[in-house]
Amino acid sequence: MSQILTLVAPPGGLSQPLLHRVRDALQALGATAGAPDWLAPEEAADLPFDGLAAEQAIAAATTALDGALVDAIATPAEGRRKRLLLADMDSTIVTSETLDEIAAYAGLKEPIAEITRRSMNGELDFRQALIERVGMLQGLPISALERTWEATALTAGALELVATMRANGAHCALVSGGFTFFTGRVADLVGFHAHYSNTLEIADGKLTGKVGEPILDRDAKLATLKRLAAEHGLPLEAALTVGDGANDLAMIQAAGLGVAFRAKPVVAAAARARVDHADLRALLFAQGYRAAEIIGG
Image (cartoon, rainbow, N blue to C red; front, side):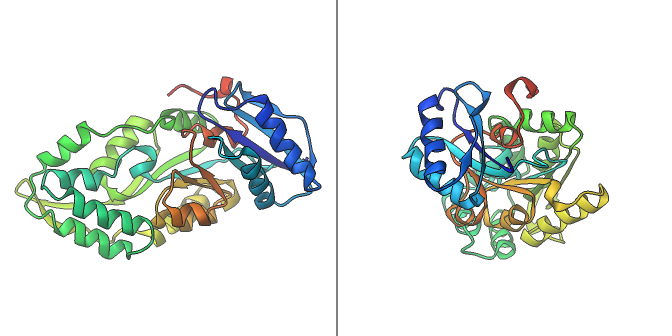
């Protein structure tokens, strides 16, 4: 069949009755649906189908799931395994917004986090919001960055996502509106081939309150996707992108598989694929990887 609906849940959250309920919902709309294929027991399964648009299949699945903590991602059966990965960092590969955490050491976490929230939901211009937030941190010692890094945690599945895609020949890059201080360390820790982000200007061991130019924003993320695809001789359909904020939306919409991961409302509403419940291994299951093929980080 020409399309696959992948259902993914936190471990133990996907049952045979739920699978059959979704399959019945597809068939009720006139689709031809094949037998479920388990990728990971009680966690991920494929439902091949024909006769419905991807958006219709996802909507039918969402209704059939009736609030169950299960993500539904529809992809073409052909070309599922992607050869280029571009991932956002903050609230995607790591669990936190690193700039907000830095701000805590200046006693400004709440006001800066509010600006971050509005920027990531597309309510504020990303570039201006970034300049404003960094400006508020002028004079903060770089020890705040070190302490923030010590408290930064990886999102579950990040190591497996990159290790598995690398092992299968994909080029993996971190592309962030955050800062090189963190992206370099995250890239080394997780195994990304490259990282692209912004630079905090520092003088005499303190933040100057300025960001180095050019600023990596929404347009720059999209440009990075197109450049890396061209450099590796790949069509955009061969790329997987993932992020949570409005500055990720252009690259999410341009890729063959663009995923809104636990995303802000404006991003979740506009993305063709979204993951709200499972961890980052969902991006591997969506490409047809079985549990036994996933490298454990």
